[in-house]
Amino acid sequence: MTTLAECETRDGADPLAHFRDRFALPEGVIYLDGNSLGALPRATAGHIARLVETEWGDGLVRSWNAAGWIEAPRRVGAKIARLLGAGDDEVLATDTTSVNIYKLVRAALSADPARHTILTEPGNFPTDLHIAQGIAAEDPAVRVQMAPRESIAAAAGPGTVVLLTHIHYRTGERYDLAAVTRTVRERGGIVVWDLSHSVGAVELDLARDGAELAVGSGYKYLNGGPGAPAFLYVARALQDRLHSPLTGWLGHAEPFAFADDYVAAPRIDRFMCGTPPILGLAALECGVDLHLEADMRLIAAKGQDLCDLFIELVDGKGLDLELITPRDRGARGSHVSYRHPHAYAVMQALIARGVIGDYREPEVIRFGFAPLYNTFAETWRAAEALGEVMTSGAWDKEAFRVRARVT
Image (tube, rainbow, N blue to C red; front, side, top):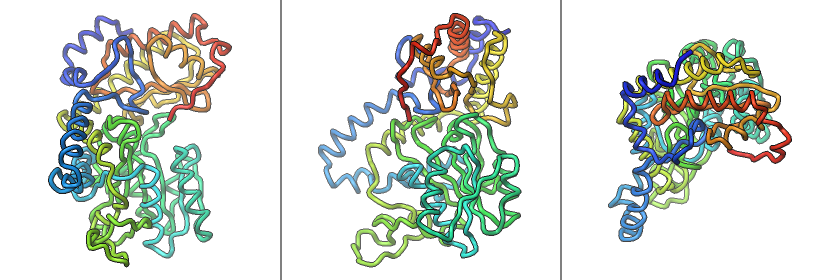
């Protein structure tokens, strides 16, 4: 089994090691929850303070033009596009993941009168399911259909919009994005991909893989801060064929003409809606810029190395935990999940020891590995802490009666 000394040696040779100092991580904490809320980049606080003091404080309303505020969704979107393998005119940083799912699923349904089915899998992330159900509730012609993961692509048809999360939030399982997209298209359907647990953690090439529509979060691996703006991707060939159902003023062809009647903007801009959240976009841009300084291939490979190491170490301890994340590097994201009847209590005991992961219903503990700041040595220490908690009985459920609800 890998030793702590061997892990320290790997850290010394890690080409991404210098990025750790670019994050404000608390002393004595091993943070393995970057797949839920990414750590704070050190540059973010100063950047936001300068924006508030100078661009807002001194520039006032002039900063919409002078400081480029109005262009922020396109500018930040173009940067995210580089992490997605997309064109810089195919991505907008805007709204929330939930809102963007609504916009793209509804737009895809409306683009073809034969489309009446939203196909997804049971156990998908709740907001994806709930938004789909809401669309069906407002349109009697639309229905939501569920199919198990292994047969989801084969269940698609010409009247289908498939809504899938690329990396499952609970188990870490990864779809073969290219294969599913190809099969669904061959069967006449279209896929909306949720990349919230993918972007910044695994390599993506949406253009190569034929993806047409996607959304994703800005506050997980991209380190954009709590509630950071999300993003949406619309392949260039589809942009003028789709219409956003949320016809807000910044999606207008001439928003500053202040016309009474709505005319959709050309291309990706039609998927804008309301006024951009400038402070949130500024924080998100700091996190995205850090990723762009690194090589995404190195980030993805290290993430899998950290997952492999953690699984190996936990396996070696013979703990009463059921691994529900694939062992195959190509079939998972950058987090590792285990099932245990008292998983919530186990995680609370770990947090009390300074190892922060998270809990997901039912009975699942997750450990998210963010390659820009997590190390091999702290992965070893986290596995040691888990072993101590499990063997000592420190997870005793009676000690943790109150469950905190964390987004």
